[in-house]
Image 1 (cartoon, one colour):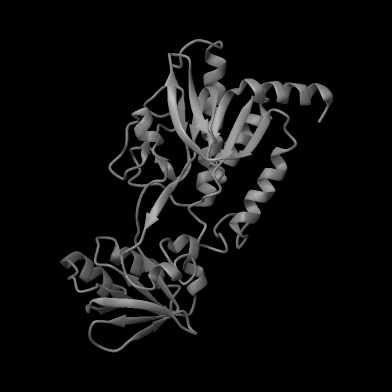
Image 2: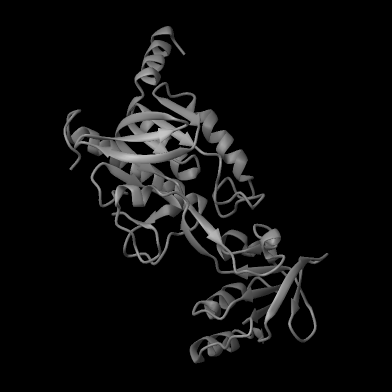
Length: 322
C-alpha cells in the first residue's frame, strides 16, 4: 500500500464515511465488496464471523470449489480483496442500522458509528431444525436440508426424508436416482393424497411412527421411533424453517416476503432507496424462497454490488437515494 493510499485509508477510518457499507462476510457480502472494489468505490465490509453454513465442513455444487471448506473460500476471497485499496474489511458485528436524513445511513459496530451513502445487507438467515434429540449434532454432515448441496454424498446409501409437508414427494423423487433406498419418516402425521401418491410413485417406503431421536452410526445415523424397530440410514433430508439473522430489516422498515426474507428486485434493491440486499436473506417476489446456494449467494452479491455502482453514478454525493 502506498503512503498516499495509507493516508487516505487512515483518514477514511477516522471519519468513518464510506460510499457503501456491506454488512455480512459470507459469499454474498464478499462478492459485493469485490465488485465494488474493482470499480474503485470506497467500501467497508463488516464480518460478524457467524455464517449459515457453519455446521458443514464442505460446500458443494460450486464450479471449481466443489468440496471446499466454506472457511477456505472466505479466506481466499479476503486475500483477493487486499488487492483493492478502496476496500476495507473489519471483523466486527453490526448491531444497528439507521437512515440519516435523506442522503445516507449509519451503521453501529463495536461501539463506532459509521456513515455511508449506501447500505448492502448480506446478513443471511438462521435455520431452525425440527425438535428431535440428536438431529442438531448431525446437521451439516449426515443431515442436510438441500439435496443439491448434499444429496450426492449419500450416493448408494439408504436416505430418510423427515416430514409430511407438501414437498416430501418431490424430495423423495429427487433422491431416488442417488440413494439405494428412500424412506419417508412422517413422524406420526399422515401424508395427503397427492404426497402419498408421489412417494409411492417413486418407490419410496413410509415409516409413519413418531420419530423419537437420532444418533450417529457407522453408516450415518440411527433413527429411533416411539414404536417399531430402529432404522439405520446414510443420510437424512430435513426441512428447516428460518428467520433473518439480524434485526436490520425491521430497523429499516424493509418490505418482507411471506418466506420472511427481504423483498428485492432483480437488481438487489430493497423497498428503501439506498438499501440493497443479497444472499439468503433476500429474494425476488417471483421466488418462493431464496435458492440456498453459495454460488447463487455470490451471484446475488455481484448483482447488488453493480446496482450500488449504478445508484452512485445516478446521483451526486449528498442527494437522496431514489
